[in-house]
Length: 157
Image (cartoon, rainbow, N blue to C red; front, side, top):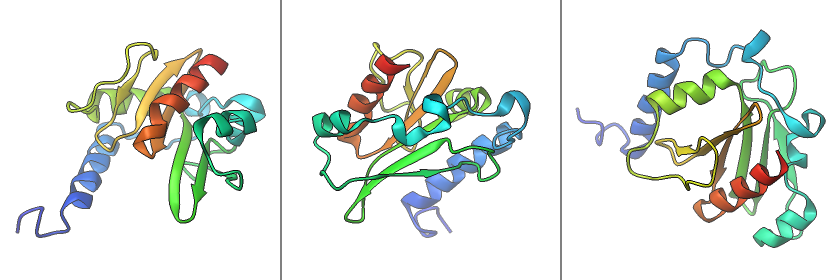
């Protein structure tokens, strides 16, 4: 049975994520130096101000929803902005080990990240990663928002 017979595209995403986890067994370990560093008092939803959201063209009713990934992280490190069943953007502050594992084992060979974003690369699932001042950030969601959001964040970090 081919991967197409087993669900097509989602199977490739699953295989890529499993591959990264296998290559780096400490991914998701929320202990010690593996903790993500989150700005704004460990409040990832403070990453985009109302003015930032207006500049990006988000609907006025859009509200960020904080979360933790992995779930055992002791503080929120992810914020998702959804509207009408559509994910606009998700910002995740990750540990260095997650950044390194994705850079070495999950980096896209099809999408080139902008040169003006420090340490930036796209992963195979379309997430845009960058690193600045000890923050390791991944921006996902609608493709038209990834680079503008990353550039807003780089200026704040």
